[in-house]
Image 1 (cartoon, rainbow, N blue to C red):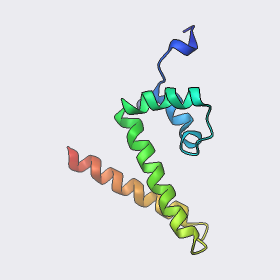
Image 2 (cartoon, rainbow, N blue to C red):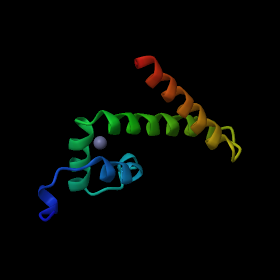
Image 3 (tube, rainbow, N blue to C red):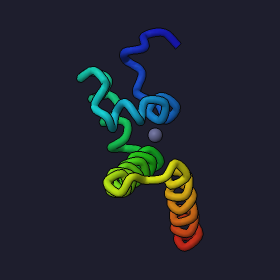
Image 4 (cartoon, rainbow, N blue to C red):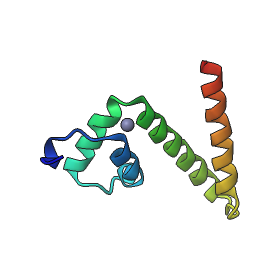
Amino acid sequence: MSEQTDTPCQCDEALAHLQEYIDCEMSEVDTVRLEEHISGCATCQAEVGLEQRLRALLRRSCMEEAPVHLRERVLSQITIISQRVVIERR
Ligand SMILES: [Zn+2]
């Protein structure tokens, strides 16, 4: 483990920076590295999709002054949905 810049981005790193990536708060270099990894990684693609769906839901509910517990409810619903998807794929 030397040359950090030559190492391809790993899931751990991609997932750790997922929020920043979606918020476009990362540097261009990091964004490109993440995109390279995500474009070839189904796990991270699913995570990004999930997070973006959650944000879209939250944005919509924020317009109606969402209660604090709503985020948790939405999160657990998404977890249930994604678990169902996994089960159905088997
Ligand atoms: Zn990954």
